[in-house]
Image 1 (cartoon, rainbow, N blue to C red):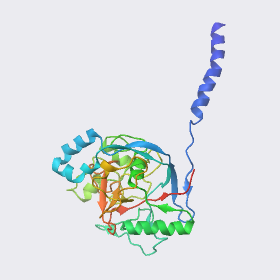
Image 2 (image 1 turned 30 degrees about the horizontal axis):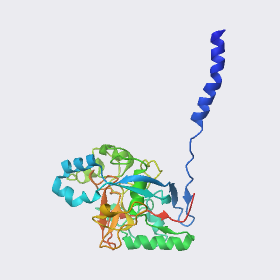
Image 3 (image 1 turned 90 degrees about the vertical axis):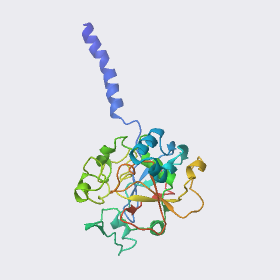
Image 4 (image 1 turned 60 degrees about the vertical axis):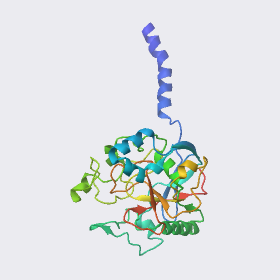
Length: 298
């Protein structure tokens, strides 16, 4: 009899536990879809994060690159500093060739060593910072909403998606092929001298957007595939002087910021903190972008 009573009294508790498991603790904001291009945007919630390299990341880079190359290519990713970011809508994917050709029908993303970069779902490349800004202005006029490039601070915050590891999937560079299109063993078969990740992502050049696992904000290809233009001027000492809340970058400069690494990059570039700089009129086989929708609230 006691055993029966215990079984019966346990049932309401078990039912309550099952209900708690079945009901999500929070619901994600639905994607916003631009009606002109069918571009999907996901909500990146406001928050605070530490921007830049960790101490252990610096030490590992120096071991791999040597101190001289580290100082030349990576030292400006310090000091690590706290930043507060307001929420924003960000393109779930990089802008594709098909989406960009609604703006410039004859655009040519060209090819690399005979491998086409021009399919509809591949990210658009061979676009300058000026081209990307012009596209955002065109789309703003068409849709009656304001679109723009992300700031560098927004970009890294969105890439990290709450993580503090070297990459948004963790510290293991060789897990990259689940999450990003990088210099891998597929590419190394084509170009044997490349320094490549010890994994195989199946793509020689750019992959169709969304081919890999997203980060925890639901954003795809934040690392790998193509470098992505940001709105900021590049400042070598910017991290030492950056304001804490929603910084916009330095007031002027020679270069614009690009973030995210690309399909032919070895591990030292495929990191959430990695920065790049390019002249605003520069175009290339690994330069693309994604957009932010500024004035749409959840």
